[in-house]
Image: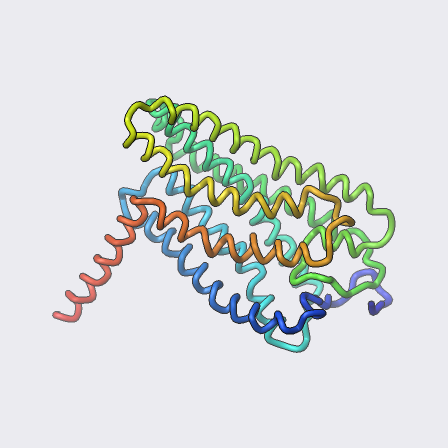
Amino acid sequence: MPLINESRPEEFTLLGFADRPWLELPLFTSLLITYPIAMMGNVTIILVSRLDSRLHSPMYFFLANLSFLDMCYTTSIVPQMLVNLGSAKKTISYMGCVVQLYFFHIMGGTECLLLALMSFDRYVAICRPLHYTLIMNQRICILLVSTVWLIGITYAVSEATATLRWPLCGLNQLDHLLCEIPVLIKNACGEKGSNELTLSVVCIFMLAVPLCLILASYASIGNAVFKIKSSEGRKKAFGTCSSHLIVVLLFYGPAISMYLQPPSSISRDQPKFMALFYGVVTPTLNPFIYTLRNKDVKGALCHLVRSIFSFKIFFCKK
């Protein structure tokens, strides 16, 4: 591994799958296809949520925020991956690495909390239906989302800043596809036990606590749903929750396996595949999960498409 005189190199070499170059072309092609799909899918969710008055409710307000997060999440890593996979020089500048580190973890931390907030919304809607409009009014929803963003930004800035303070001993190679906290800690020199402990404690708060809140919410929801006598009512209640539950499993599964273990114990390829999954696959699948399993979103999407085509036909006739 090349050494330079300074602890902060001018650029990093992202090794990625250098030991398996045959993976680069399929990965490049996959990212080139999935990235536009993810962007279009999430933009569609945001537009439908804003333009259709039937979707002007807290649930779809939070969903639009999730789609915006997913767009930022995947944009923080995929363009850089495409540049590196499509060229022989697989580098990222130090400042580029810093920017990516902050943005990637801001979006990740905020999404953890936003998914918990969305589960709380479903809990209030199903378990406290008579108080739903009172509890989840517009002012409260904006306040809750703002708080989630503030905590996510605070977490990412504090963790990333603490990580960047550790000397890299002149090592400028990262065995990863992007700049991520566990990989940078693993690359740092000196005693890393305290930093790993701090990372683990903060990640327990950012991952385990929201996950416990989600599980508690769905335990209460399940109990309430089974008390509903109407089979149609139970089906509708499960329908509104199933999409969110699938998204939670897709996001939290890889994130927990990555962040709730000491960085020094992480295998070589684990961060690469995990980053691809929760940074690329999940943002691509989320719009389809919410669209295909939600009648309201499908209806609003069909209405939007019909409106666009009707406008085009009317314009052409003019």
